[in-house]
Length: 522
Image (cartoon, rainbow, N blue to C red; front, side, top):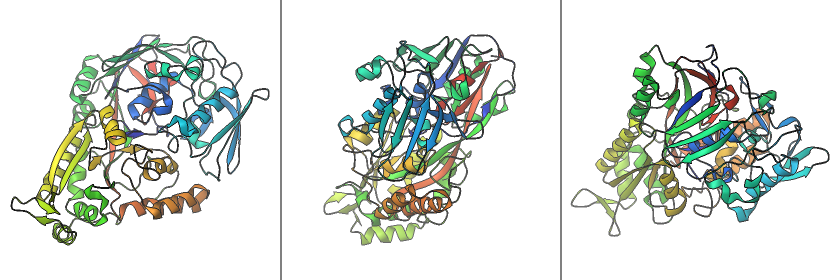
Protein backbone atom coordinates (compact mmCIF):
# COMPACT_ATOMS: atom_id res chain seq x y z
CA UNK A 1 0.00 0.00 0.00
CA UNK A 2 1.25 3.42 0.52
CA UNK A 3 1.16 6.63 1.20
CA UNK A 4 -0.25 9.11 -0.94
CA UNK A 5 0.89 12.81 -2.46
CA UNK A 6 4.61 13.18 -2.86
CA UNK A 7 5.55 11.57 0.34
CA UNK A 8 2.68 9.77 0.58
CA UNK A 9 -0.13 7.80 -0.49
CA UNK A 10 -1.51 9.17 -3.58
CA UNK A 11 -4.37 8.68 -5.81
CA UNK A 12 -3.43 11.19 -8.44
CA UNK A 13 -5.65 13.23 -10.67
CA UNK A 14 -7.44 16.47 -10.25
CA UNK A 15 -7.45 19.73 -12.12
CA UNK A 16 -4.01 21.26 -12.16
CA UNK A 17 -2.83 24.49 -13.71
CA UNK A 18 -0.68 25.09 -16.73
CA UNK A 19 2.61 25.56 -14.94
CA UNK A 20 4.67 28.19 -16.69
CA UNK A 21 2.24 28.69 -19.54
CA UNK A 22 2.80 31.23 -22.30
CA UNK A 23 6.47 30.71 -23.17
CA UNK A 24 7.66 30.05 -26.73
CA UNK A 25 8.30 26.33 -27.42
CA UNK A 26 11.80 25.11 -28.31
CA UNK A 27 12.28 22.07 -30.50
CA UNK A 28 13.00 18.64 -28.95
CA UNK A 29 15.53 18.38 -26.17
CA UNK A 30 15.52 16.80 -22.71
CA UNK A 31 13.16 17.63 -19.87
CA UNK A 32 14.58 16.87 -16.41
CA UNK A 33 12.36 16.64 -13.33
CA UNK A 34 13.24 15.99 -9.68
CA UNK A 35 11.71 13.01 -7.90
CA UNK A 36 11.79 13.30 -4.08
CA UNK A 37 12.38 9.55 -3.69
CA UNK A 38 12.89 6.38 -5.66
CA UNK A 39 9.56 5.04 -6.97
CA UNK A 40 10.25 1.39 -6.14
CA UNK A 41 8.45 -1.31 -8.11
CA UNK A 42 6.72 0.02 -11.25
CA UNK A 43 3.69 -2.28 -11.50
CA UNK A 44 0.56 -0.05 -11.60
CA UNK A 45 -1.35 -2.72 -9.67
CA UNK A 46 0.90 -2.12 -6.65
CA UNK A 47 1.51 1.62 -7.08
CA UNK A 48 0.16 3.67 -4.21
CA UNK A 49 3.16 5.91 -3.65
CA UNK A 50 2.70 9.30 -5.26
CA UNK A 51 6.23 9.24 -6.63
CA UNK A 52 5.52 5.91 -8.35
CA UNK A 53 2.42 7.31 -10.02
CA UNK A 54 4.45 10.29 -11.24
CA UNK A 55 6.79 7.89 -13.04
CA UNK A 56 4.00 5.72 -14.42
CA UNK A 57 2.06 8.67 -15.82
CA UNK A 58 4.62 9.06 -18.62
CA UNK A 59 4.25 5.52 -19.96
CA UNK A 60 0.65 4.56 -19.25
CA UNK A 61 -2.68 5.83 -20.49
CA UNK A 62 -6.02 5.95 -18.69
CA UNK A 63 -9.52 5.53 -20.06
CA UNK A 64 -10.35 9.18 -19.40
CA UNK A 65 -8.30 12.14 -18.27
CA UNK A 66 -8.66 15.56 -16.65
CA UNK A 67 -9.25 18.77 -18.58
CA UNK A 68 -8.00 22.24 -17.73
CA UNK A 69 -11.07 22.98 -15.60
CA UNK A 70 -11.03 19.61 -13.84
CA UNK A 71 -13.60 18.08 -16.18
CA UNK A 72 -13.49 14.49 -17.48
CA UNK A 73 -12.15 14.34 -21.06
CA UNK A 74 -11.61 11.43 -23.50
CA UNK A 75 -8.33 9.50 -23.45
CA UNK A 76 -8.19 5.80 -24.42
CA UNK A 77 -11.97 5.94 -24.49
CA UNK A 78 -13.54 8.24 -27.07
CA UNK A 79 -16.98 8.15 -25.43
CA UNK A 80 -18.84 6.54 -22.54
CA UNK A 81 -22.29 5.80 -21.14
CA UNK A 82 -22.66 6.07 -17.35
CA UNK A 83 -25.26 4.40 -15.14
CA UNK A 84 -25.62 4.20 -11.35
CA UNK A 85 -23.49 1.07 -11.07
CA UNK A 86 -21.75 0.76 -14.44
CA UNK A 87 -19.99 2.64 -17.18
CA UNK A 88 -19.47 1.44 -20.76
CA UNK A 89 -16.51 2.84 -22.67
CA UNK A 90 -16.04 2.85 -26.43
CA UNK A 91 -12.28 2.71 -27.07
CA UNK A 92 -10.38 4.62 -29.72
CA UNK A 93 -9.28 2.56 -32.69
CA UNK A 94 -5.63 2.04 -33.54
CA UNK A 95 -4.20 2.25 -30.02
CA UNK A 96 -1.02 0.21 -29.63
CA UNK A 97 1.24 -0.76 -26.79
CA UNK A 98 4.89 0.26 -26.80
CA UNK A 99 5.79 -3.22 -28.12
CA UNK A 100 3.41 -2.78 -31.08
CA UNK A 101 0.64 -5.05 -29.82
CA UNK A 102 -2.94 -3.71 -29.97
CA UNK A 103 -4.71 -2.36 -26.90
CA UNK A 104 -8.23 -3.80 -26.96
CA UNK A 105 -11.28 -3.83 -24.67
CA UNK A 106 -10.07 -7.22 -23.43
CA UNK A 107 -6.79 -5.56 -22.42
CA UNK A 108 -8.68 -3.08 -20.26
CA UNK A 109 -10.88 -5.79 -18.76
CA UNK A 110 -7.88 -7.91 -17.87
CA UNK A 111 -6.33 -4.97 -16.00
CA UNK A 112 -9.43 -4.35 -13.91
CA UNK A 113 -10.16 -8.00 -13.18
CA UNK A 114 -6.55 -8.64 -12.18
CA UNK A 115 -6.64 -5.83 -9.61
CA UNK A 116 -9.98 -6.90 -8.12
CA UNK A 117 -9.03 -10.60 -7.99
CA UNK A 118 -8.39 -11.37 -4.29
CA UNK A 119 -5.50 -13.61 -5.32
CA UNK A 120 -3.64 -10.57 -6.69
CA UNK A 121 -3.70 -8.81 -3.29
CA UNK A 122 -3.48 -5.47 -5.09
CA UNK A 123 -3.28 -2.54 -2.65
CA UNK A 124 -5.06 -0.26 -5.14
CA UNK A 125 -8.22 -2.40 -4.98
CA UNK A 126 -10.73 -0.37 -3.03
CA UNK A 127 -8.56 2.74 -3.42
CA UNK A 128 -7.90 3.59 -7.07
CA UNK A 129 -10.17 0.80 -8.33
CA UNK A 130 -13.58 0.55 -6.61
CA UNK A 131 -14.23 -2.40 -4.35
CA UNK A 132 -15.66 -5.36 -6.24
CA UNK A 133 -15.51 -3.74 -9.69
CA UNK A 134 -15.78 -6.18 -12.59
CA UNK A 135 -14.98 -5.66 -16.27
CA UNK A 136 -16.53 -7.26 -19.34
CA UNK A 137 -15.12 -6.70 -22.83
CA UNK A 138 -16.77 -6.82 -26.24
CA UNK A 139 -13.88 -6.64 -28.69
CA UNK A 140 -16.16 -6.83 -31.72
CA UNK A 141 -18.07 -3.75 -30.58
CA UNK A 142 -14.95 -2.03 -29.27
CA UNK A 143 -16.43 -1.57 -25.81
CA UNK A 144 -15.64 -2.47 -22.22
CA UNK A 145 -18.13 -2.25 -19.36
CA UNK A 146 -17.04 -1.69 -15.77
CA UNK A 147 -19.60 -2.45 -13.08
CA UNK A 148 -19.78 -2.38 -9.29
CA UNK A 149 -21.91 -4.54 -6.95
CA UNK A 150 -23.77 -1.46 -5.67
CA UNK A 151 -24.39 2.03 -7.09
CA UNK A 152 -21.14 4.01 -7.14
CA UNK A 153 -21.42 7.78 -7.51
CA UNK A 154 -17.92 8.37 -8.93
CA UNK A 155 -17.66 5.33 -11.22
CA UNK A 156 -16.57 7.40 -14.25
CA UNK A 157 -14.23 9.71 -12.33
CA UNK A 158 -12.45 6.77 -10.70
CA UNK A 159 -11.05 5.66 -14.06
CA UNK A 160 -8.93 8.83 -14.39
CA UNK A 161 -6.37 7.16 -12.12
CA UNK A 162 -6.45 3.66 -13.59
CA UNK A 163 -3.25 3.05 -15.60
CA UNK A 164 -3.76 0.40 -18.30
CA UNK A 165 -1.01 -2.20 -18.72
CA UNK A 166 -0.73 -3.84 -22.14
CA UNK A 167 1.59 -6.05 -24.19
CA UNK A 168 4.20 -8.28 -22.59
CA UNK A 169 3.73 -6.84 -19.12
CA UNK A 170 0.11 -7.97 -19.07
CA UNK A 171 1.20 -11.55 -19.68
CA UNK A 172 4.13 -11.49 -17.24
CA UNK A 173 3.74 -8.86 -14.52
CA UNK A 174 7.19 -9.65 -13.11
CA UNK A 175 8.51 -7.59 -16.04
CA UNK A 176 6.89 -4.50 -14.51
CA UNK A 177 9.11 -4.32 -11.44
CA UNK A 178 11.73 -2.24 -13.26
CA UNK A 179 10.20 -1.59 -16.69
CA UNK A 180 7.02 -0.24 -18.26
CA UNK A 181 4.57 -1.90 -20.65
CA UNK A 182 2.01 0.71 -21.60
CA UNK A 183 0.48 2.63 -24.46
CA UNK A 184 1.57 6.07 -23.24
CA UNK A 185 3.59 8.74 -25.08
CA UNK A 186 6.92 7.90 -23.42
CA UNK A 187 8.73 4.58 -22.98
CA UNK A 188 11.10 3.85 -20.11
CA UNK A 189 14.53 3.10 -21.60
CA UNK A 190 16.78 3.22 -18.53
CA UNK A 191 16.04 2.67 -14.84
CA UNK A 192 18.80 3.21 -12.27
CA UNK A 193 17.23 2.81 -8.84
CA UNK A 194 17.97 5.69 -6.51
CA UNK A 195 19.44 7.81 -9.31
CA UNK A 196 17.38 8.37 -12.47
CA UNK A 197 14.73 7.08 -14.88
CA UNK A 198 15.01 7.95 -18.59
CA UNK A 199 12.11 7.95 -21.07
CA UNK A 200 12.05 8.35 -24.86
CA UNK A 201 9.12 9.75 -26.81
CA UNK A 202 6.97 7.43 -28.95
CA UNK A 203 6.67 8.52 -32.56
CA UNK A 204 3.18 8.29 -34.01
CA UNK A 205 1.37 8.41 -30.67
CA UNK A 206 -2.08 9.85 -31.46
CA UNK A 207 -4.52 8.87 -28.68
CA UNK A 208 -3.75 11.22 -25.83
CA UNK A 209 -6.37 13.17 -23.85
CA UNK A 210 -8.81 14.84 -26.25
CA UNK A 211 -6.88 13.32 -29.19
CA UNK A 212 -3.46 14.69 -28.24
CA UNK A 213 -0.40 13.54 -30.19
CA UNK A 214 3.38 13.49 -30.01
CA UNK A 215 5.46 15.39 -32.56
CA UNK A 216 4.20 18.80 -31.49
CA UNK A 217 6.53 21.84 -31.33
CA UNK A 218 8.45 21.99 -28.08
CA UNK A 219 7.72 18.46 -26.90
CA UNK A 220 10.89 16.89 -25.47
CA UNK A 221 12.37 13.83 -27.13
CA UNK A 222 13.67 12.64 -23.75
CA UNK A 223 12.37 12.91 -20.19
CA UNK A 224 14.74 12.26 -17.28
CA UNK A 225 13.32 11.82 -13.79
CA UNK A 226 16.22 12.41 -11.41
CA UNK A 227 16.01 11.16 -7.81
CA UNK A 228 16.83 14.18 -5.61
CA UNK A 229 15.73 13.51 -2.01
CA UNK A 230 17.04 16.82 -0.65
CA UNK A 231 14.96 19.90 -1.49
CA UNK A 232 17.89 22.27 -1.06
CA UNK A 233 19.80 20.26 -3.65
CA UNK A 234 16.78 20.27 -5.97
CA UNK A 235 16.46 24.05 -5.67
CA UNK A 236 20.18 24.50 -6.39
CA UNK A 237 19.96 22.27 -9.47
CA UNK A 238 16.93 24.16 -10.71
CA UNK A 239 18.67 27.52 -10.38
CA UNK A 240 21.87 26.25 -12.02
CA UNK A 241 20.06 24.59 -14.94
CA UNK A 242 20.54 20.98 -13.83
CA UNK A 243 16.76 20.57 -13.61
CA UNK A 244 13.81 21.95 -15.53
CA UNK A 245 11.26 21.38 -12.78
CA UNK A 246 10.74 20.34 -9.18
CA UNK A 247 7.94 20.28 -6.63
CA UNK A 248 9.06 22.00 -3.42
CA UNK A 249 7.31 21.75 -0.03
CA UNK A 250 9.65 23.44 2.43
CA UNK A 251 11.71 26.52 3.18
CA UNK A 252 13.58 26.47 -0.15
CA UNK A 253 10.41 27.78 -1.74
CA UNK A 254 11.25 31.32 -0.63
CA UNK A 255 14.40 31.75 -2.72
CA UNK A 256 12.81 30.10 -5.75
CA UNK A 257 9.76 32.34 -5.50
CA UNK A 258 12.08 35.37 -5.34
CA UNK A 259 14.10 34.32 -8.41
CA UNK A 260 12.73 35.99 -11.58
CA UNK A 261 14.25 33.24 -13.75
CA UNK A 262 11.98 30.64 -12.15
CA UNK A 263 8.38 30.16 -13.26
CA UNK A 264 6.23 29.14 -10.32
CA UNK A 265 2.76 27.96 -9.49
CA UNK A 266 1.18 27.11 -6.14
CA UNK A 267 -0.76 23.85 -5.87
CA UNK A 268 -2.70 22.15 -3.11
CA UNK A 269 -0.40 19.56 -1.56
CA UNK A 270 -2.84 17.58 0.56
CA UNK A 271 -3.00 17.49 4.32
CA UNK A 272 -0.24 17.20 6.85
CA UNK A 273 -1.83 14.72 9.25
CA UNK A 274 -1.13 11.81 11.55
CA UNK A 275 -2.68 8.47 12.47
CA UNK A 276 -2.48 6.30 15.57
CA UNK A 277 -1.98 2.56 15.10
CA UNK A 278 -5.07 0.93 16.59
CA UNK A 279 -3.93 -2.67 16.36
CA UNK A 280 -3.82 -4.89 19.42
CA UNK A 281 -0.97 -4.01 21.77
CA UNK A 282 -0.57 -0.44 20.51
CA UNK A 283 -1.38 2.52 22.81
CA UNK A 284 -3.64 3.98 20.13
CA UNK A 285 -6.00 1.02 20.40
CA UNK A 286 -7.58 2.89 23.34
CA UNK A 287 -9.70 5.84 22.12
CA UNK A 288 -9.13 7.62 25.44
CA UNK A 289 -5.38 7.53 24.82
CA UNK A 290 -5.77 8.79 21.24
CA UNK A 291 -7.88 11.71 22.38
CA UNK A 292 -5.53 12.53 25.26
CA UNK A 293 -2.43 12.48 23.06
CA UNK A 294 -4.19 14.75 20.56
CA UNK A 295 -5.20 17.17 23.33
CA UNK A 296 -1.54 17.31 24.40
CA UNK A 297 -0.55 18.93 21.07
CA UNK A 298 -1.05 22.56 20.07
CA UNK A 299 -2.20 21.82 16.53
CA UNK A 300 -2.15 25.48 15.49
CA UNK A 301 1.56 25.77 16.29
CA UNK A 302 2.21 22.39 14.70
CA UNK A 303 0.48 23.51 11.48
CA UNK A 304 2.91 26.39 10.98
CA UNK A 305 5.91 24.19 11.73
CA UNK A 306 4.86 21.31 9.48
CA UNK A 307 4.12 23.55 6.50
CA UNK A 308 7.05 25.95 7.00
CA UNK A 309 4.33 28.60 7.32
CA UNK A 310 3.10 28.01 3.76
CA UNK A 311 -0.06 26.05 4.59
CA UNK A 312 -3.65 26.89 5.35
CA UNK A 313 -6.23 25.41 7.76
CA UNK A 314 -7.31 21.90 6.86
CA UNK A 315 -11.01 21.69 5.99
CA UNK A 316 -11.31 18.20 4.48
CA UNK A 317 -9.52 15.08 3.26
CA UNK A 318 -9.84 15.48 -0.53
CA UNK A 319 -7.68 17.71 -2.73
CA UNK A 320 -9.08 20.92 -4.15
CA UNK A 321 -11.13 21.35 -6.24
CA UNK A 322 -13.26 18.91 -4.27
CA UNK A 323 -16.29 17.16 -5.73
CA UNK A 324 -17.96 17.77 -2.36
CA UNK A 325 -17.19 21.31 -1.11
CA UNK A 326 -17.49 22.02 2.60
CA UNK A 327 -15.64 21.96 5.92
CA UNK A 328 -15.60 18.63 7.75
CA UNK A 329 -12.73 19.52 10.11
CA UNK A 330 -13.35 22.76 12.01
CA UNK A 331 -14.58 22.09 15.54
CA UNK A 332 -14.36 18.31 15.14
CA UNK A 333 -10.77 17.59 16.25
CA UNK A 334 -10.03 17.32 20.02
CA UNK A 335 -8.88 20.77 21.16
CA UNK A 336 -5.54 21.60 22.81
CA UNK A 337 -5.88 21.04 26.57
CA UNK A 338 -2.75 19.67 28.31
CA UNK A 339 -4.47 19.43 31.70
CA UNK A 340 -7.33 17.39 30.27
CA UNK A 341 -4.81 15.22 28.42
CA UNK A 342 -2.92 14.46 31.64
CA UNK A 343 -6.11 13.66 33.54
CA UNK A 344 -7.34 11.39 30.74
CA UNK A 345 -4.08 9.44 30.65
CA UNK A 346 -4.29 9.02 34.43
CA UNK A 347 -7.86 7.77 34.11
CA UNK A 348 -6.82 5.34 31.36
CA UNK A 349 -4.36 3.75 33.79
CA UNK A 350 -1.16 5.35 32.49
CA UNK A 351 0.48 6.65 35.67
CA UNK A 352 3.73 8.67 35.77
CA UNK A 353 6.76 6.59 36.79
CA UNK A 354 9.80 7.82 38.72
CA UNK A 355 11.44 9.01 35.49
CA UNK A 356 8.30 10.82 34.33
CA UNK A 357 7.41 8.18 31.74
CA UNK A 358 3.91 6.84 32.20
CA UNK A 359 3.49 3.15 32.94
CA UNK A 360 0.54 0.75 32.83
CA UNK A 361 0.69 -2.90 33.86
CA UNK A 362 4.48 -2.68 33.90
CA UNK A 363 4.70 -1.35 30.32
CA UNK A 364 5.95 2.13 29.44
CA UNK A 365 3.84 4.42 27.27
CA UNK A 366 6.06 4.10 24.20
CA UNK A 367 5.27 5.82 20.92
CA UNK A 368 7.27 4.96 17.80
CA UNK A 369 6.67 7.95 15.53
CA UNK A 370 7.15 7.15 11.84
CA UNK A 371 7.48 9.83 9.15
CA UNK A 372 8.81 10.28 5.63
CA UNK A 373 11.96 12.28 4.96
CA UNK A 374 11.06 13.48 1.46
CA UNK A 375 8.63 16.29 2.30
CA UNK A 376 11.06 18.97 3.39
CA UNK A 377 12.42 20.17 6.71
CA UNK A 378 8.94 21.06 7.97
CA UNK A 379 7.91 17.44 8.44
CA UNK A 380 11.12 16.65 10.35
CA UNK A 381 10.46 19.66 12.59
CA UNK A 382 6.83 18.58 13.02
CA UNK A 383 7.93 15.13 14.16
CA UNK A 384 10.28 16.68 16.70
CA UNK A 385 7.52 19.00 17.93
CA UNK A 386 5.12 16.07 18.39
CA UNK A 387 7.81 14.13 20.23
CA UNK A 388 8.43 17.04 22.61
CA UNK A 389 4.70 17.48 23.31
CA UNK A 390 4.17 13.80 24.01
CA UNK A 391 7.29 13.51 26.14
CA UNK A 392 5.95 16.38 28.22
CA UNK A 393 2.72 14.39 28.56
CA UNK A 394 4.69 11.39 29.83
CA UNK A 395 5.37 9.26 26.76
CA UNK A 396 8.65 7.69 25.67
CA UNK A 397 8.83 8.79 22.02
CA UNK A 398 11.16 7.22 19.46
CA UNK A 399 11.49 9.00 16.11
CA UNK A 400 11.88 7.02 12.89
CA UNK A 401 12.37 9.09 9.74
CA UNK A 402 12.66 7.04 6.56
CA UNK A 403 12.35 7.13 2.77
CA UNK A 404 8.97 6.48 1.17
CA UNK A 405 9.53 2.87 0.14
CA UNK A 406 10.70 1.91 3.64
CA UNK A 407 7.78 3.81 5.16
CA UNK A 408 5.41 1.84 2.95
CA UNK A 409 7.02 -1.40 4.13
CA UNK A 410 6.55 -0.38 7.76
CA UNK A 411 2.90 0.47 7.14
CA UNK A 412 2.01 -2.62 5.19
CA UNK A 413 4.30 -5.35 6.38
CA UNK A 414 6.34 -4.88 9.56
CA UNK A 415 3.80 -2.69 11.41
CA UNK A 416 6.64 -1.37 13.60
CA UNK A 417 5.07 1.99 14.47
CA UNK A 418 2.55 3.58 16.84
CA UNK A 419 1.99 6.98 15.20
CA UNK A 420 2.61 7.89 11.56
CA UNK A 421 2.73 11.29 9.87
CA UNK A 422 1.13 10.42 6.58
CA UNK A 423 -0.32 12.60 3.83
CA UNK A 424 -2.91 10.79 1.73
CA UNK A 425 -3.77 12.91 -1.28
CA UNK A 426 -6.88 11.78 -3.13
CA UNK A 427 -9.31 13.49 -5.47
CA UNK A 428 -12.41 11.44 -4.65
CA UNK A 429 -13.68 10.56 -1.17
CA UNK A 430 -14.27 6.99 -2.32
CA UNK A 431 -10.51 6.57 -2.74
CA UNK A 432 -10.01 6.84 1.03
CA UNK A 433 -12.26 4.01 2.14
CA UNK A 434 -9.78 1.26 1.28
CA UNK A 435 -7.23 2.86 3.62
CA UNK A 436 -9.68 3.63 6.42
CA UNK A 437 -11.88 0.52 6.53
CA UNK A 438 -11.60 -3.21 6.00
CA UNK A 439 -8.92 -5.70 7.01
CA UNK A 440 -5.86 -4.29 8.74
CA UNK A 441 -2.43 -4.54 7.16
CA UNK A 442 -0.83 -6.77 6.04
CA UNK A 443 -4.11 -8.46 5.05
CA UNK A 444 -5.58 -5.22 3.69
CA UNK A 445 -4.78 -1.57 2.96
CA UNK A 446 -6.14 -0.41 6.34
CA UNK A 447 -2.63 0.36 7.63
CA UNK A 448 -3.76 1.94 10.95
CA UNK A 449 -6.28 -0.84 11.72
CA UNK A 450 -9.15 1.64 11.99
CA UNK A 451 -12.55 0.28 13.00
CA UNK A 452 -14.80 3.34 12.87
CA UNK A 453 -18.26 1.93 12.31
CA UNK A 454 -19.91 5.32 11.87
CA UNK A 455 -17.44 6.30 9.14
CA UNK A 456 -17.89 2.94 7.41
CA UNK A 457 -21.69 3.20 7.49
CA UNK A 458 -21.79 6.80 6.28
CA UNK A 459 -19.21 6.14 3.55
CA UNK A 460 -21.12 3.11 2.30
CA UNK A 461 -24.34 5.13 2.14
CA UNK A 462 -22.61 8.10 0.50
CA UNK A 463 -21.02 5.90 -2.17
CA UNK A 464 -24.42 5.03 -3.57
CA UNK A 465 -25.98 8.48 -3.12
CA UNK A 466 -25.32 10.91 -6.00
CA UNK A 467 -25.32 14.69 -5.88
CA UNK A 468 -25.56 17.06 -2.91
CA UNK A 469 -27.16 14.48 -0.62
CA UNK A 470 -24.24 12.14 -1.16
CA UNK A 471 -21.78 14.97 -0.54
CA UNK A 472 -23.46 15.80 2.76
CA UNK A 473 -22.94 12.19 3.83
CA UNK A 474 -19.29 12.28 2.78
CA UNK A 475 -18.64 15.36 4.92
CA UNK A 476 -20.34 13.68 7.89
CA UNK A 477 -18.24 10.57 7.31
CA UNK A 478 -15.01 12.57 7.40
CA UNK A 479 -16.04 14.33 10.61
CA UNK A 480 -16.71 10.95 12.19
CA UNK A 481 -12.99 10.17 11.86
CA UNK A 482 -11.81 13.29 13.68
CA UNK A 483 -13.90 13.19 16.86
CA UNK A 484 -12.33 9.90 18.11
CA UNK A 485 -8.89 10.95 16.76
CA UNK A 486 -8.75 8.12 14.25
CA UNK A 487 -7.09 10.64 11.95
CA UNK A 488 -5.77 14.06 13.03
CA UNK A 489 -5.63 16.65 10.22
CA UNK A 490 -3.11 19.37 11.05
CA UNK A 491 -2.70 21.62 8.01
CA UNK A 492 -3.52 21.79 4.31
CA UNK A 493 -0.14 21.95 2.64
CA UNK A 494 0.60 23.95 -0.46
CA UNK A 495 3.42 23.10 -2.85
CA UNK A 496 5.49 25.15 -5.25
CA UNK A 497 5.82 23.76 -8.77
CA UNK A 498 8.99 25.52 -9.93
CA UNK A 499 10.15 25.49 -13.57
CA UNK A 500 13.01 26.76 -15.67
CA UNK A 501 13.21 26.34 -19.44
CA UNK A 502 9.99 24.33 -19.66
CA UNK A 503 6.24 24.39 -19.10
CA UNK A 504 3.71 21.64 -18.40
CA UNK A 505 0.43 20.81 -16.69
CA UNK A 506 0.91 18.88 -13.49
CA UNK A 507 -1.76 17.14 -11.48
CA UNK A 508 -0.96 16.17 -7.88
CA UNK A 509 1.57 13.37 -8.27
CA UNK A 510 1.02 12.96 -12.00
CA UNK A 511 2.15 14.42 -15.31
CA UNK A 512 -0.06 15.22 -18.24
CA UNK A 513 2.92 14.29 -20.42
CA UNK A 514 1.69 15.71 -23.72
CA UNK A 515 1.63 19.19 -22.15
CA UNK A 516 5.40 19.25 -21.49
CA UNK A 517 7.07 21.93 -23.62
CA UNK A 518 10.69 23.05 -23.73
CA UNK A 519 11.07 26.83 -23.94
CA UNK A 520 14.84 27.13 -24.29
CA UNK A 521 15.07 29.40 -21.28
CA UNK A 522 17.01 27.04 -18.99
